[in-house]
Image (cartoon, rainbow, N blue to C red):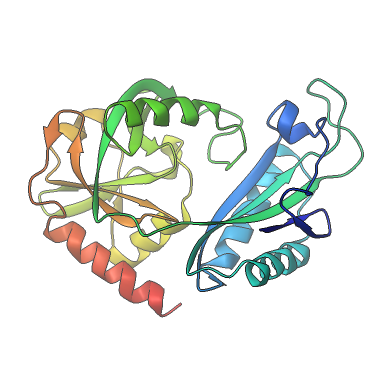
Length: 270
């Protein structure tokens, strides 16, 4: 396995960043995960646009997107696989201990891991912790993911693959690494970006291609929605067949199945 680190390819066991990198010491970094099918990254430009927005939100210099493109191409060529998780990580770089950022410049790492297609449906749980829609990090895809690690571990303990958060005012927000859609009376809804959720690339394409409405939704919508599904880079559109103790028999339901079909057809044309 070969990785890109700060300007070149390296064998995975020889790739190095400093133990004083700000991404490691304080989580000062942003990242993107792209799906790569037979060496071809999906929706690269929207992902790079979001990488830049996230970097600006942290006050990092704009990433050199030409270098990021070269790095992705080199890693994909060096590690052929049918379905991969392409990870671009961009951090504050070598810095003093503490929150102050150093002046050595940012770190760029691009890595690829093999993955497999997700099942058509999955189980999710809700967790008692909240997303802060007023946080300085709201809507940014940062490497500060510890609360997601905790929530996802709780989901796995309960036989689920994802955990869903409310925001501070009790509205449905997002999962640890996914956006959530619900069907109410045949209509498709998803929380607005103002809820504090990430502006998911797959979410945006699903909204565009299905006409889903952005709607403020109370958390208890999960107890009465006719259908629920998740979207993310590696899930695409994935139905939910259980949320906490509530079963949704027949998942994927008709609206979800249509969204899955539309997404697959439109994505294949990109």
